[in-house]
Structures are given as C-alpha cells and as structure tokens.
Amino acid sequence: MAEAALLAVEYGSSIAQLLHGHGYGPGHSVSARAVSEGVWLTCPACDYVGAPASIANHSKKAHATTIGEQAQGAER
Image (cartoon, rainbow, N blue to C red; front, top):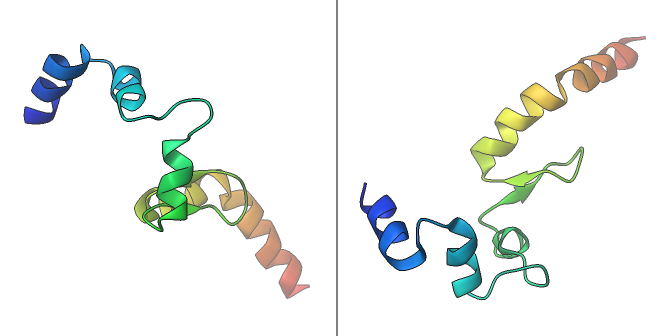
C-alpha cells in the first residue's frame, strides 16, 4: 500500500513518470541494468528477462514444448 501511495504522490500514479524521473527511457533501459547488475537473468532460449523465479515460470510455459521435443530427440 505504501508503494502505491508513494507512486501516486511523487509520480501521479505513473510508472512511466517514475522511470523517467530516474533517468530511464528509450536510450537507458532499467531492464538491461537489472540484467547487467545480476539481479535479473535472460532466458537461455529467448530474449525474455526477469527475476530468477520469473525466468523459471516463463521457461515452463513458453518453452515446455520445445524442452519436451528436445528430450524426445535425445532419446532417439
């Protein structure tokens, strides 16, 4: 709740304004910084980035068929 109040008071409830206020934008990606500082990861199978738990969830959903197909191919 405090996060929502802070966002409302300081940035008009706009994440875009919060990012801009901290110097992020088209030429300066907060996602790229999170990856470069090691707090986020990049999916090894695609360009998706996120926290380790997000990468695990993403991989299960987005790459489940690919992983299953690879396992079947390895068994042949």
